[in-house]
Amino acid sequence: MRALTNYRVAVEEGLQNVSEYLQNQGCDVVSLGQHQNRDCNCFVISGMDKDLMGMQDTVGQIQVINAQGMTPDEVYQAVQRGMDQQQRG
Image (cartoon, rainbow, N blue to C red; front, side, top):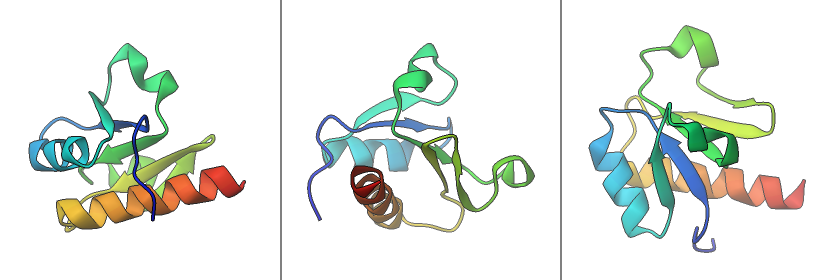
């Protein structure tokens, strides 16, 4: 899988370990809820609003990952898969 440089990911507050991990992997991480979200490639949620967004789904063309029960590396791998699908689509 390729690096996620210049790939913008919005991460819900409370997922600091995931944010830091994604930043260390080269992602541009912003807080979910900021105005920059319209330019994001992916959303990572904590799972508290599971009924709102589902386990792993898309909002329009934006991938949504429920990080509940996942390690930061597992979230990163899910982000990579989503990026690969977006580039193929």
